[in-house]
Image 1 (cartoon, one colour):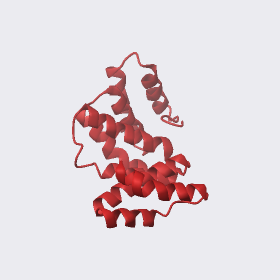
Image 2: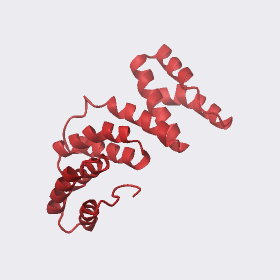
Image 3: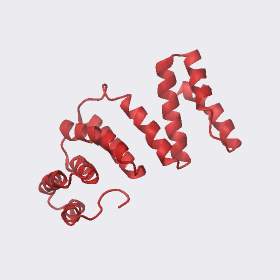
Image 4: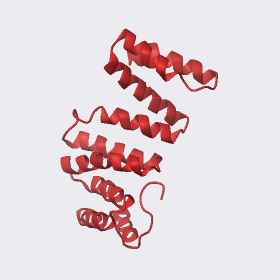
Length: 173
């Protein structure tokens, strides 16, 4: 967008050329001074998450990605497209973060996806999160539902079997 291109990107590009981290406080202040606090928070968090992803700083990415998604929590409540967004956001955190507090934080995102549009892939994400958080019996219950919804999908059958055997499942496993 305009704010990103005119304010954030020049500061980020200058820091990148110098092999430094951008001055996120300066970016935030510049946007806040020209627009408002809401835009400053939103754009700075999005750009910070993007920069951290580009540089594979996954703990930093997780923090700012979660902040960007939380900003949409009250706005994106139901429907297939929003369920898709919440599931994919939860899966992204599962893929790049090893922090159980981050997994706990995204569990409601996954739950929202399942409640909004209970398709097998989103229930699978929810089951895996439950499993990772130590709720093995609950995870197996949900993964069993997944295998009934998609009985020919071998990945779900394999996930269920791995859960029963207490083996790793999910992204990066």
